[in-house]
Amino acid sequence: MTVALMWEARAAADRGEELLAWVRRQPLAPEPPRRETFRAPQDRVLVITWWDAPYDAELPELPEPAVELVTRAVHRWRFEAVDGAPAEGGPLG
Image (cartoon, rainbow, N blue to C red; front, side, top):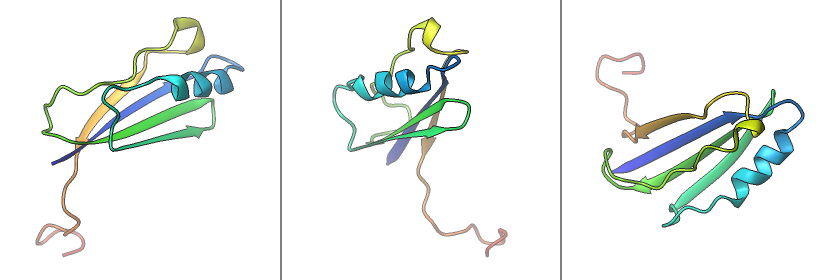
């Protein structure tokens, strides 16, 4: 099964580049098979990691940054991959 962990934070005013640099320096042990980092308006930073693991597996996650670097607590979500076929009777089926 593939599990995706999402980590999203919003930087304090004028600290978006600093938050992005901080995120890029954070190691995960073990390293995930795939890790992507994104940014968006309002100095938001998103990191998605993909793992070959059960949904409830213990997986390394990025920590909380220093409170002065962000405007709020980090948001975290966990998703499991589903196949690409639409459900029968669904909007595409």
